[in-house]
Image (cartoon, rainbow, N blue to C red; front, top):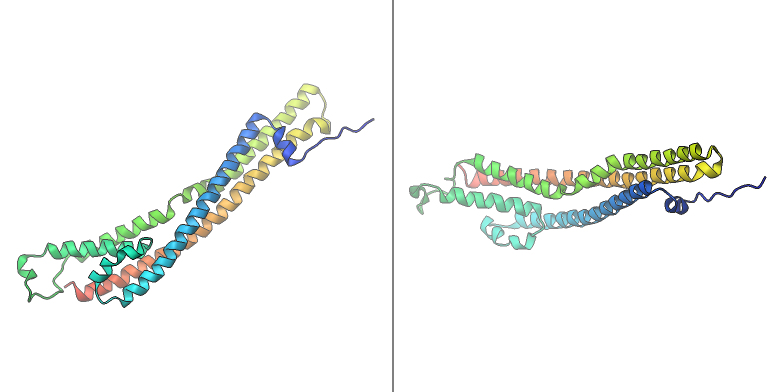
Amino acid sequence: MDKVAVNTSPIEAILQASFVVQLTLLVLVGLSVVCWGIAYSKWKQLKRIKITNEVFLSYFWKSDSLENLYDDLDKFRDSTLAHVFKSAYLEMKKLADSRPSENKAENAPKSSLNNIDNLERVIRKAIENEMAHMESKLTVLATTGSTGPFVGLFGTVWGIMSSFHKIGATGNASLAVVAPGISEALVATAIGLAAAIPAVVLYNHFVSTIRKEEIELNNFSADFLNIVKRNFFN
């Protein structure tokens, strides 16, 4: 008996796969491309933030005036620390402008501001806004990492179902009958994992990096509040 050659290479398996499996593979490839695009943009964003934060922090400790520092904030557009400082400084100005007129006299002490709770609330809100900005689009990575294997599994199940249908239609369980369906099923599983694993790794990496930035934001806010409490608040 002559042996029937069966081509089960990944490319052949994809080309010969059913429409449903091909659509599943297209979705997985699309998700993978989107994830890598997000990863690249997020890597650039966090790198800019880290560099500008280091520069701003050095400038902050060397500055002898909060007003001068505020005037130079355009130099630190990508700095999350600068954004938090801007929000805090503007709130301080509002508190200063809301003081009774007798406290604004030239001989009034600078430490006449009140409502430190307002300033702390503004700083917390500013930090939350910066965190939300840094964490934006990471849900796509998390979703791909958690659902990718299951989407691939759907393609796997569909490919195996196709093999069983062919067996039932032909009454033949030879390799030539079942191999194409099994091959496309395994390809779907492989692409599902190939999309999910990098997404999980990238997501964990960016979350870890953002948590470090959050710690830096909290440390800066604590230092800033200590400075203004000593110099501007009763």
